[in-house]
Image 1: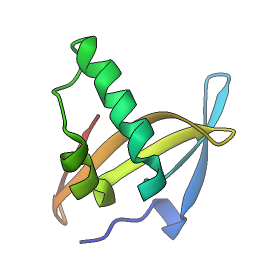
Image 2: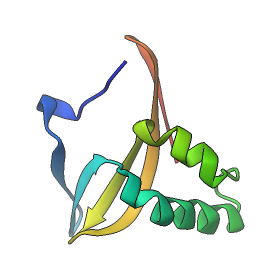
Image 3: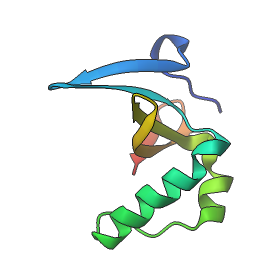
Length: 89
């Protein structure tokens, strides 16, 4: 089941407090930065460890946030059915 951003957009600009960032689906070229973000969060005890292979396999579920083309965050959107989904870092 594919999921697009609201309004079917490929990218969406979001403003939170004084920061503006773009949210988009992750691409293959993002894997290294996603691995780095997950490793950093794992070291701080914020998330469970994920292997590079797991990230690669689930890349279609990842969304990234970027500021001026620098990836600053990521999450996974797991859609289970039309009424149930889960957002995970």
